[in-house]
Amino acid sequence: MSNFVRTYKRRKIFLDQLAVGNSVSFAAEAAGGTSSLFKRWRESDPDFASDWDDAIESGTDFIEDAATDRALKKSDPLMLAILKARR
Image (cartoon, rainbow, N blue to C red):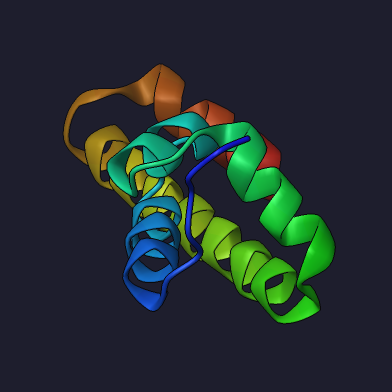
């Protein structure tokens, strides 16, 4: 049995890490747990699941913005890939 306790602090750390594009595994470790513990939390808490989805969307936007910035400054092939994905 795990000693993992669901706290607001863990929830916030986990969601903040997802929102900046980090993986579920990285976010879980940063919040003091494992990905399987956070996945079980998600399954049992619809509000947490919704916030998780929102954080993933924010993280994807963050990564897309970083890729676009890099493409504009350094990489024509990356820019072409971004344009193909958008169009």
